[in-house]
Every structure is written in C-alpha cells, then in structure tokens.
Image (tube, rainbow, N blue to C red; front, side):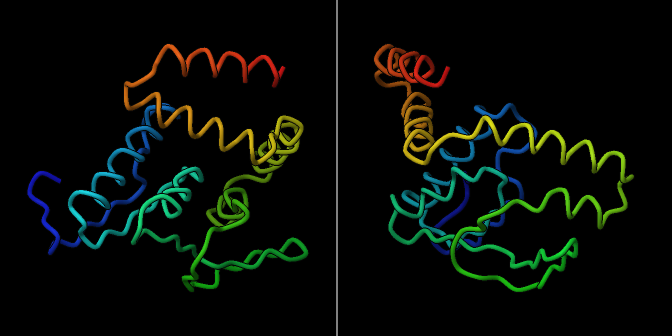
Length: 157
C-alpha cells in the first residue's frame, strides 16, 4: 500500500485472514476503505467477512462480485462464473466435501451449523454490530460505543 498509486493493480486474497474475527474485520475494513478512498487503484480482494459487502453502499466505485455455484439435491457444482452482487449462502461444507474431507467431519460441521442457526440475528441488529465494530476501530467515541454494545448485548440475551 505504501507504494501503490491510482495506476496500480492491487490483488489481495483473504484480506484479514489469520487474525481474530474482530481484528481481521477491522483490518480488512480499514485497508479496503483506505485503498478505495485514498489510493483509488483498481483492486480485487477476496475475504470471508460477509460484513465487508456493506463497503459498496458506503464508497463510490466499490462493488461486490461472487463466484456462482449450484447446490441442488445434495449435488454441488462450481459454475466458474463471476456475477455481480453478494453470495447469499456459504458453501464451505460443500467445498470441504469436494476437497475430500471425511464424511464424519462434514457431518459434525453440518451439526454445528444447524445448532448455530438458533443463534442468528436479524439484519438490523447485524448492521448495528457492524457499525459499532467499524466505529470502535477508528478509536473515536469508544466509551459511548462500549455502552451501546453492552445495551445491544443485553437485548440479545
């Protein structure tokens, strides 16, 4: 990033990977926001943070693309085509199956996913969590944001 200009091509794979969830998201958001607003270079990056898709609503010139796939009747097919928009479903277990992971591992993963579905939150709450995390990472209004996060956590219990 130090040497990049608006004429650079920046390619980043798994931006924010290898960190804790909040560190990773904070880094991914900050880096991509800086590149898209300050450097303005053509940039392609892949990330596992679904929350990053909201950057396209906030920064002109940012868009989302996803790799298309079909999942039907237990069959999974990568279509090897790129489409505009946001992928509506994660295919991690299906890809793990294609990679040859043992069926017992896949069954356990499906079990954990099913159990975690009970812990899902609505879109408005999700957006609040993303906003609080993003603002907190800027270092401004920390006390106020911590209070807001505590109140939100109470409502989620």
